[in-house]
Image 1 (cartoon, rainbow, N blue to C red):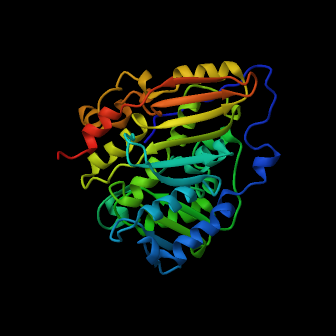
Image 2: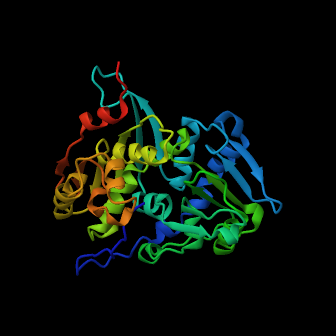
Image 3: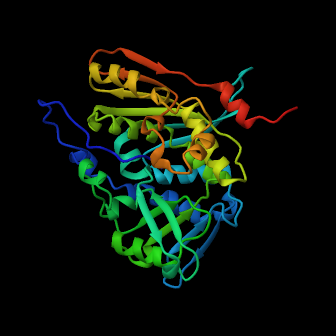
Length: 349
């Protein structure tokens, strides 16, 4: 979960339009990710996923609740989350002393649209136990269907809305969504029931771990937004983060995925102006936070499981390189903490 986002700012003489410039407006994150969604559904057994449908035809994909899921499923779901505008891969390190054996690598030439317009988990979906007929439900929705519903103030800043007739939403929760939530998503997105796919990936699952760690670039874009930098400054983005093994405990699983980014995440941004590159290199890394230096699970527990008590500056990659198109220079800030990661993830021989 990310903290509240202030409005971004631009320089007074900057007359460029927001994200909804002609090229971005012509892109549909739901249309671009449609073939990826079809692949996940059609090849579900190969990805360790299970597919079911509601009475009205809405497709539900279980990628880690009862179904085992897989790393491959997590990679594909991460690509769906990015609206088909990102490359996501898993690389095995052959170095003698790697940061970690497996690494998630992400790249996009549409960083704002892919990461904030689609991947960001910003749509809050909740239902009371009376509404569900059982226990209360809460999840943050991420993925391209967010751009159909545009329920978040962020979309007004981006100046973007999708109008495709199909949509996909990813829910990071440990059970399939109840009908009341499905109905809300359908209504807000303006979709026919059979045109919606909902994918469930618990954080403690294999696929869930992958798709959360694959947010390393998105976290950098969100922090850039929090800092008040005009988002159209960022024109290219790539990054990597170590892929930890899942943890059976929900808090520990959340801790591992956050630690992967906060202490092991590396991001390279390309921006338009030199002053922005210098500023981001200095201010973007997670080490600027007062809460930096402890495992995330410990931080979360110390604040009585309240995300909003955690310093917002913590939600950032460990290390950044920022290149300026204006000057051709690249600036560096932050560093990874391999010792902290190994202390949390490695077993004793």
